[in-house]
Amino acid sequence: MREGSRDRLSARAAVSGTSASGVFEGPIGSSHRGSWLVSVRKSYLDWLVRQIDPEVSSAIGFVDAQAKLVYDLTPSQQVQFLAIAGDAQYKDVEASSANDLKTAVSRSMLGSAYWRYLHPKAVFSQRVSFIGNDFINKGSVGQRMAEGHTDQLIWRSDLIRPLARGWTFEGGLRYEYLNRTDTARKFAASGPGSVRVTAERSGSTEPSTAAGWTQVSWSGTKSAMTAGVRGTDRTSAKHRVLPWVLAEHTFGSTTIRGSAGRSSQLIDPLVATPEPARIPETAFSYDASIDQPLGHGIRAQATGFYRTESDVLRRTGEDRIDPVTGKRIVESVFPTFAPTLTGTSQGIDLLLIRQAPAGLSGWIGYTWAHSRYHDEKTGEDFDGDFDQRHTLNVFAQYRLSYRMTVSAKFRTGSNFPLVGYFAETTDPEVFKLSTLRNQARLPVYARLDVRANRTFTWSQKRLTLFVEALNVYGRSNVRFAAPGVNVRTGQAFGLFDTLFPFVPSAGVLLEF
Image (tube, rainbow, N blue to C red):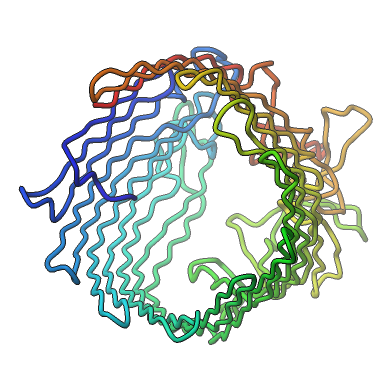
């Protein structure tokens, strides 16, 4: 998203075993009053993964391009134009049943025009953007399982005005118009290699959303504070006023920070609910942290956070066992939702960082967190769909010389629940429908990636050779998939999708 170079024409091209990309940029005119930048990326990691491990049946590939133009009309006025377009494709070579997803294609584009005016006492800007998206999902015999189109037109205006003695005022307005249509279908087999439609749901919406915000900031030699408020109104939703405050203070070399605020998420107007969902999901968040230098470029940081949520959507028509009758309740043909959840999320982040121009640098981060929800209508209590109690991330880089570095990244987590009503059996690989939600979990996730770079420079050119390996020890990590259920036994199948295996790669980066 940066501006292009105003100094000279330059290019950057990279090719590896998983992707290829190019960035080209340069100044505009002899006076260098502007710049241009064009970039293109193509990923073929999906193809490579399938060659290495044919058991990985599903994968995603993408290609995208970007162009940005910046020009100074006068010393105080600047215009920018930005365009981004991309195409993402999903494939599952093992899709076979009437409602298995075999291919999914999503095409998106964004165009934006920006104007900024620098006044001696303020900065004023205007931006107009357009976003368009088309998607289509197809099944095992090419049937159109889902398709849709979205257009968004967005206008935004911002004002920044410095005030006296470290005070700054910021404010803005935003307006968005959305036009969206979606269609989803369910099928049943009608013969060898053919299917028929058994259910269809279509919808369209054209809401508009207006928002305004303001905040005041103060910064001193050892302290800083920001307080603000935002108001949002949508034609199909209830108005919300959202305040926030952030502050920090340094005692010697120790910095303490804290914040509190209210936030909301407007519900997708096409989500199926028992009645129009006019009340947005709302949360109150609080956090506090301490940052302490330890010497020799090492810094430690600890952050605690707590959040309460209300009117959160949950799916109401899930496959499950009735706790009273013991009989199976079959899921609805199409997903339905209701804003019946209240809940809390809390945890702590611990971070140790070493920054050094030579030798060893990197960081170690650990998070403990817990998300828990209560359904006000059914009385159920369960962990959040993305609840992960333990997460560890380690990154280390060693600079052997100014031309060569080696690095490694390790991440592991206790993983998320199997979303829905599933329970383990005596066989740890077999699950059945249950009366309790989110009680079973995915296996522990762990992955190690390594990389080495060697750079060669001459004149105004630089060549970097690199080798890397993803998932070095070939662990079979999995993610939750849309499962099926045996009607007679209640046994769930197809709960897991295998993530990518050990993937070696090498490449070259040329800058000139």
